[in-house]
Image (cartoon, rainbow, N blue to C red; front, side, top):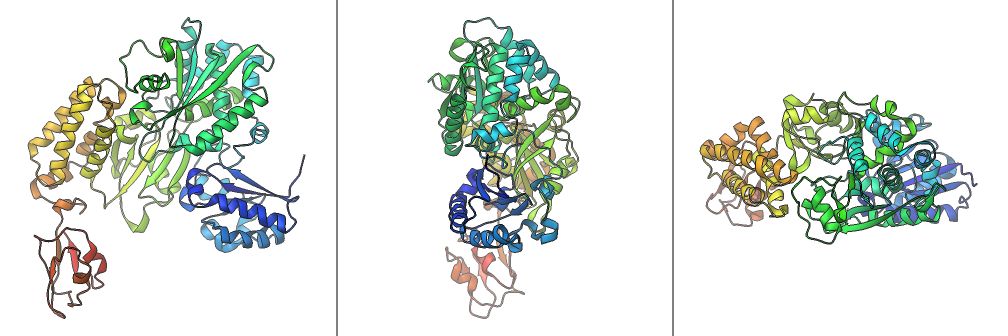
Length: 598
């Protein structure tokens, strides 16, 4: 076995790859070879570290120095100074730590990780996802070996059940109970399925796990297959995730080569294989029955339940379906025990949860926290607060199916029950932060517009009802709404929630209902005062030049694309509202701050 004095970890997740991390990796390998360091320093391509805003990320071990915003041209200095002479490059260190502060630290010492607990993401950013030996070195496939050689099927199911693990895909159904139902179904063939569709705007949790630690999902699916009596599994992943698909294909091939998938695994007589099915990006295929129909080659649309998939799923056979993050917890539960997992989190929400933190937040990225962590901790301690000194306004959880929670609920513990009680939901894990410049009426309109576009159209409440709600919201943001429209929105929402065919349609009104509950004053301002308090809705905006501040420099006149600004040189100018297209170019150009948006 080769021993290296230093390891250079380069993030090769989607975000960093798009920012040039492949070129950075190649440059490291080239320079290390040129300087004769190839027997001393190993370069490793990893999955996502979570620090997405600071990418491309490079971490040097054993000292744990974390470099951010690395460019290919920076590699020369890192190699010549840090790797050759042991002197970290201060200008590239995240948060500008001193050399003394950086020495001996691990990545987990970074303030971004201080409140996190990484279980599903335990190997992301740590191992090479395309090298099964690195996964094995992190106790990979030991849980599968333990399950197959030391535990009965019933004991495996009981361990998952006692752990309190709930589905991380949105519904929060107890995972062990789903496994038990499928185990109890009698059939000549059963299936294990993995939902890696992940269609929520701003969500990339499952993608990151597949890109950074694909074997954790394969191992868990094999454990599930053994537990319920299935010999075949399917991973349904959207084709827009090419890096994830590639690494899954590599991982499946490697697991076959090592005898960890296929026939007679660990000599126990247990056979299990996994196939990949690519989705075309339909949001509705995140719903379990639509997903299974798509795997079968049919139109992806929900079907009524019961029977549930545990009784009649893929190809009319009993099927157990979980999402990527749920599976990513399973091996650790089997290895360390149900008591270890259930000791984390809250009474009814055990373990941790991964969130894709985005929007108006300083530290956008991927975070994993114990259930019950307050929203305030995620937003301010991990997320670093709101950029540019702006005020926090709301956090949207649960994607298009979730709700928007205001400032007064920042101390809400993040778990399944508290979020539902507050008017939102856990969802798959998207968490979008909004500041004072966001219009909550427009936010509700945005998510509802997404749902309307993605509706499969099978049931009338979702197909027609959400479109009627969207029409009302469009009228309101254009200043044409009435107070009666608010009653119509709530009436339509109640009807859709109680009659839509699937969970996606039933939860579609949530963004509207939550904003009506917590930000009703903004709806009223749009309707009664014909004003958008956030100065966002273009139809309600008005640009005015304050004559006392205007110097008549003509700069605004020159940039106006509509010729809406009139005036003479060195005399106050005037904006003709009938011509103004409200683009804001004049306001951005005026150095005297004479133009106001109202």
